[in-house]
Length: 154
Ligand SMILES: [Zn+2]
Image (cartoon, rainbow, N blue to C red; front, side):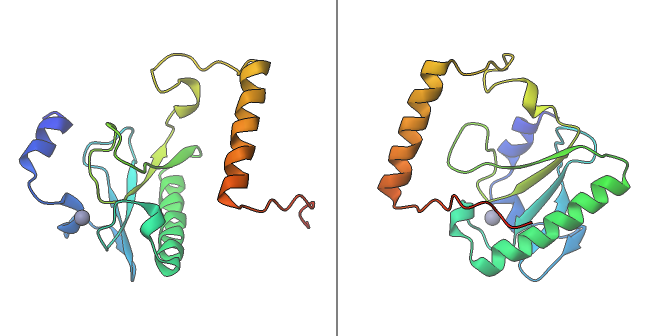
């Protein structure tokens, strides 16, 4: 069955009703597997509370999810995968099929080779790089973010 057909049959949020698919549970989140995996070993870490953005998580939920992501990575490594990507989609883009926030742990996923249109990635031109830097610094200033440029202690 195609994943998009599977989703059409789901009326309620599929992540609010998981039970026998949960592999590891913690106080505020759980770890499960993807029913329509990108690759073998594709896992998901999902907060128990239905939120649609990682910005809506409490500090305790962030920490809980981080600890479960570490366990998920350990499982993926135990399965024999040394390379993996952790992916979380935010917002309402067409690629996010379930609105309930979820973090993907995807072994051996070659995200890095292609751009969002499926074409080989290209390096920014110097002109577009300078424009991007200018835009990002303006946004950082507008947001009031303070940049700590001191070297980190090792
Ligand atoms: Zn939900």
